[in-house]
Amino acid sequence: MPPSPTTYDVIILGAGASGLMCAFTAAQQGRRVLVLERANKIGKKILMSGGGKCNFTNHFVEATNFISDNPHFCKSALNRYSQWDFIAMVERYGIDYEERKHSQLFCKQSAKEILAMLLTECDVAGVEIKTHSEIESVEAIELKGHSEKHQHEDKRSRYQLNIKQGHEKQKLQCQSLVVATGALSIPSLGGSGIGYDIAQQFDLKLTERRAGLVPFMFSDSYKAICERLSGLALEVDVSCHSQTFTENILFTHRGLSGPVILQISNYWQPGDEISIDLLPGLNVADWLLKTKHKEAKSLLRTVLTKKLAKGLVAELQSLFWSEQADRPLAEFSDKQLMIIGDQLNNWTLKPSATEGYRTAEVTLGGIDTDGISSKTMEAKQQSGLYFIGEVLDVTGHLGGFNFQWAWSSGYTAGLFV
Image (tube, rainbow, N blue to C red; front, top):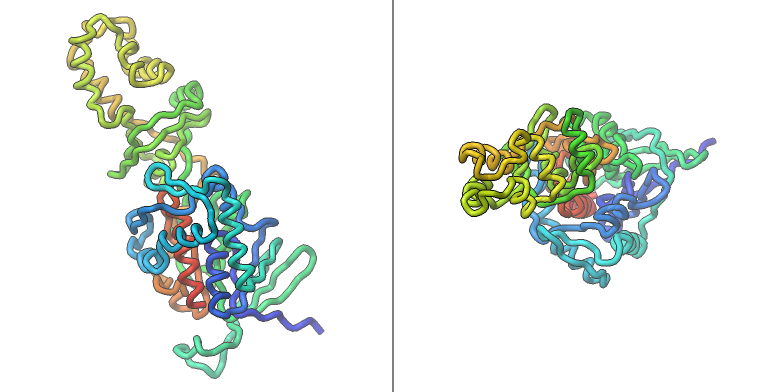
């Protein structure tokens, strides 16, 4: 006779940022909590984020920092557990942190401190965590004798899970099941689509998903330009679909990366152009006309190398004024200089694609929030089933916002499971 299933109050799928937050929050409410992680290690994405320093939140968090088909969905959780709440926990643990550009907060020492803090909270609260756990199936247990509106008072198990750990198979049951499985981005860190499969199993809709916070690639002549400039970084404005970000751009051997490209990638669709202002804050046309009168004998590339890297100016010259390369400024017409100035303030490029999920920091889209309660993270039509973190159709900008969504949504679900 097979052994009877092991029973928990709450089972959480995924030991990432949102899953761990939910786990100790629920355990602090007196719930018996098990976290199942399919990878061999816990919190891999936490450890690699921010170059190993973990950009754990931001001093300024607004709903406008998030992309979702329902831009209001994130507000309730962000208000319930704010950046100040997480900062207070970080300070309580004596973790040194620093504020960088755009109010981003990073550990001074190591992301390991954030993970250690979360695991200590789990340990103190009595959370059980198992790695190498593959979910083979999830089934709802039909509860008889209780009306739907009284299900929260019903302490019987509502879900059965069949899992595999190495060669060992096990049946588990729980009253509340929390899906914190992450998404498709960076599969080497444990991301997968199982959360979407569970959502669809219980008739929840998905929005279109694609790679977000991801570098661009080129297949035309610009690929060769990017290769030649590989390693060069400079601060620029990049625009697409009425969205503009100011940050560093980085040329790579595949195309364009850097914080500003990752930000704008969330708004770019295949076939779109992006516009790069190489000298933000400067009207280059006006500046060139004034410089023409002051330095009439100078070459255009000579005056531009005062503001831009020599290699970049050489590439721009071959694109925009190759025939006048060796003419002094005096021989340029005002109209020519105005056109070149406009091109430098509005360099238009068409990426061929992004690098995809392999290097994407997040997945745009996910489980449609119409089917989820913003106040509890519970599926509206499926009692005891919760979704938190990146698996939902909520994606933050670069800068600590995706971690803050993990903390806020995880904490919210932890109160109600």
